[in-house]
Image (cartoon, rainbow, N blue to C red; front, side):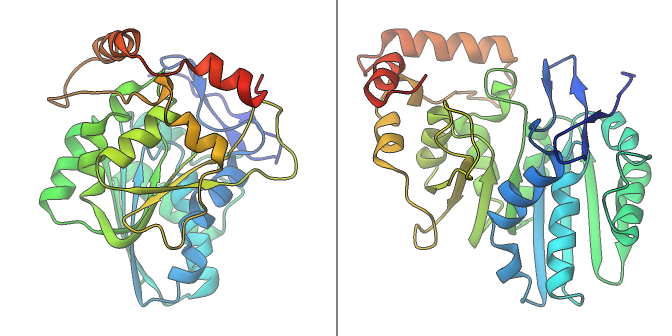
Amino acid sequence: MPAWIPQPTDDSSFTFFSAEFGEAFHSQQGAKQEAFLKFAQATDLVEKAKQPQLCLLDVCYGLGYNTAAALETIWSVNPDCFVTAYGLELDASVPKAAVVPPVIDGWSESVQAILRALATDHQCRTPHLQAKLLIGDARQMIQSLQQASVQADAIFFDPFSPRRCPQLWTVEFFQQVARCLAPTGKLATYSRSASVRAAMQAVGLQIGTIPLSQTHLPHEWSQGTVASFTAETLIPLSPMEQEHLQTRAAIPYRDPLLSDPAETILQRHHQEQQQSHRESTSSWRRRWGIR
């Protein structure tokens, strides 16, 4: 089992670094901040919490921060809201390592208790919550939720980046995930990748952007993507982002049988890009002055 060493982020919350995927689980700008801004807020949970019940789906549960931020948000608005929550996670050792100090300290005592139960028992039941953590390849786990007719009001889509974990950013996987999204639900992800956005559109989702905050890096143009079945409450993509979807970068990843290894998916994707007559991403970057 890997040794998960807590690494502080800029908002004093913690993340882990995955040697397998070569990435941290969260942005260095703040793990907890990211969970609230890019997931809980982006899926309109403050407004949705006024409902008597909600269903959440956390794709790539990891340290549990997105689920925790969602529960804190919902119950601060409506303590009586009953939440059904599902988490998909490949490695059971990650949530276990995240329920000890100092990693877990930033959450309320009630939410800490829920995170501990999910990490140890993979399920939790309280008067206002029924939660389950499914361990294994998300491509298979999502199919069991689809068969159970899960309809999530909010989906937190948080795998490692497409280049590191392409198998969870394919058209075929998004198709499975979209079937678990309620008609009025929203899916949020930190990714602003054109290939990701194109995959969402390919399965019938409308997409919007998560606008930049006042402080951002020069090469950033968005904090992520929000998707739903209707565009009414989404923040439209900028002209620059719309043009990004016409470049070779917008060719989506494919995994026809939901079983290919990452190397095969990456190779297939590279071949499609090489054969494409679309504008190159570097040309698009130069036109918009993106470094």
